[in-house]
Amino acid sequence: MTSPSDAESLPNSIPALQELVATYQQELKMLDEKQKRLFEAEDPKNGIFFANEIHANRQEKNMMQVQMQFAQIRLNRLKMEAEPLF
Image (tube, rainbow, N blue to C red; front, top):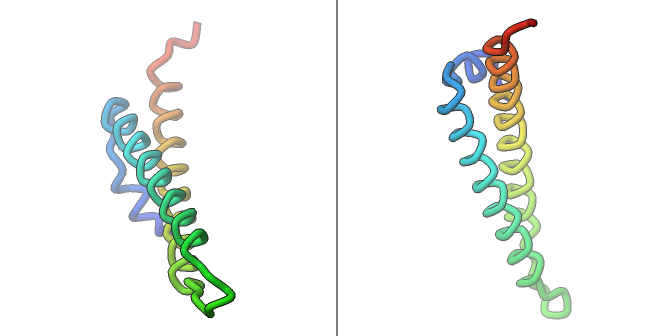
């Protein structure tokens, strides 16, 4: 679970947050590719399973998604505050 201090440690500039979100998206893509490779490498007939690795990968992906959501929320807030009301 992400703590409030993790959310407070996010950058406070739009460009830095955009870069951070892009980095999270790349990391999520790599985690998806790793997940796919793990599933393809399993061979139930020969008793080859990667349940622990798949579970750890899913947990890492979930944590990454939450961190990306925090960054996206802060980015949206900063963009909204930067726009004039009228």
